[in-house]
Image (cartoon, rainbow, N blue to C red; front, side, top):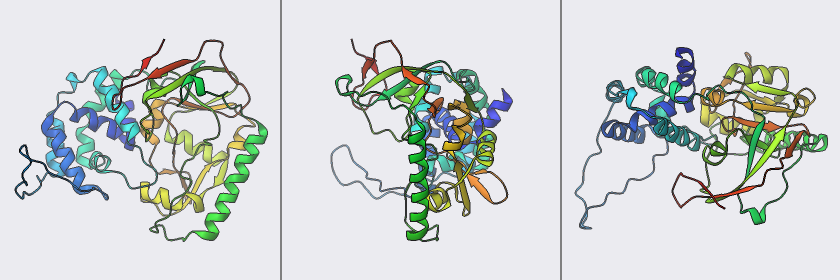
Length: 351
């Protein structure tokens, strides 16, 4: 359990998970994280104050909290009161808060502070116990989501060699265009393709709840069609940052020009970047699965490949499978339409 807790605390998403879970148990800690995060956030936005009677509020200084203050409040948290429900809510939050095109937000910055990270260890150990599927491998029963009503749904995309070749050509064209048109200065305000997995290819999840709830940068969908799928073949497991780095070493694809600006903002690293060459990977593997722990320990993090190159796991959800071979099919079970109320987390199946 200690090793798994260490893995959680090594990743930006895992640290955010732990801090959000801890803050959910203590209002004072929640306030301290908010105010310190507001100060550390490179784009904090504007705070607007209101009064109960609608009059102009009196000028006031913002509360001031330090790294030591937050760490001390974390240490007093009784991690034993955390529940499976609070762990799940924190997991939803950390996935939704993932960003690859801008600097880490204030809460991520607070969670990365050394003394805060050290103080979160008991919380991490408790979450490992509450989230037993952290290391679960790929399962044969899979689900994919079409964020439209069932009446508007279409057939799932089937991977093919032509689709892979088209993806590779598109990537090379994007690299050449970025090299030609974008400045080399990483501080320049340019953005582009920041993801490291081929978004054109079908992805699936092992649980319906994960497919609906654990979504990066969610657009607030309120209706979804859940499609049962099954696939077979050679499944590669990505369990850690080391697994991802090894994949990039074996199947390297230069991505420096197209990712330079976005990945500098998220990691602070100015250097050369790789993503995996998915067309070559498909010659050996039919699908690649990212475990939940692999996501929490490695996504939004700079991962060294060698002395010259690094990489980022970007745009890939926890316990998600990317299908590269033409081995995935919609299953014979019926599609399901799900809905949720505006601004609610709970999805309900219809019918």
